[in-house]
Length: 393
Image (cartoon, rainbow, N blue to C red):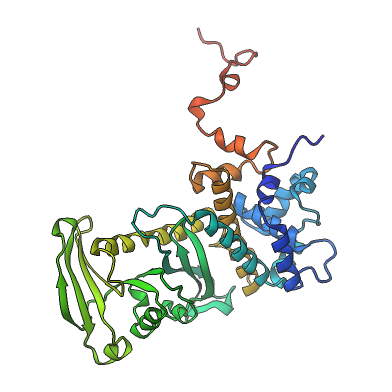
């Protein structure tokens, strides 16, 4: 007898089904589909991400073991390794890419008022990439070097809530700086980048779009100081200067003024030099903005450790991109649920709880609230009415 919805079904209820169906229709995902729809594929792959399944056969075995619960989980199709493999290989990955963008839009709206710890009302983005190594013999389409394959996840993250707002999946040969060519800068927003994105022509284009950037300078920067501003050296600041570039090529690429902020990081015993086109915020805020860039590094570390994106269920480009985009959808969905249910636990703890309870039939909020095992209900702590296994004399 069914006595409620499974945890997995409650999680999937937060998905906007209307938007998902629009993505399916746009790319004819269910064309000539008989027994395994795009929704079935998404649910199976989301289950694999939540429970960290190792292979398609692993997914099949686990779901078939719970056959009586599949209907109530929302899975209507026939679960088999061949069905999953065919769907991942042939159904357009853009279905799940566009659906992930829908979820990202919802998450960003929920987290837009998150506190950054800075007195800034503007949106702050961090731009970076992460490389995923692949086997060249299995993934020849992702050739990186002579004996190595790889793909890159170029990610633009909204630091309010650590929500990725833009993701581009490329092969490993695409240099980070090329992403600036396809990135549409938002006027008034801040973009935090490391030295891999230092290209003055592209940065000047961003400045012309009325966006602000904060980027680390290289050691061989050729520039002339125009003005110096007072700084509080007790904060680690060394200088705050207005400069112009003096290199022949760089001066042509960026003919306007720049701001150079030098900072000494006492923890790492390291001098850091930042360049920005923002002149109205305090110099210490520039350093704190760059410090917040570490959130995107934590994001890459989190999804690689807690989601299945380092090894893949298929070897084609379509299968790899499908798996990555569904993984991003799961990450964003967990963030949405955490915010809507006003949960105080971390995303890591939330995901770990879900990974072992997806087939349970209890209310999601009750499951998560009972995480302080030192304060379990009296009914649980009460001694059971049964004999002792061992007698102690």
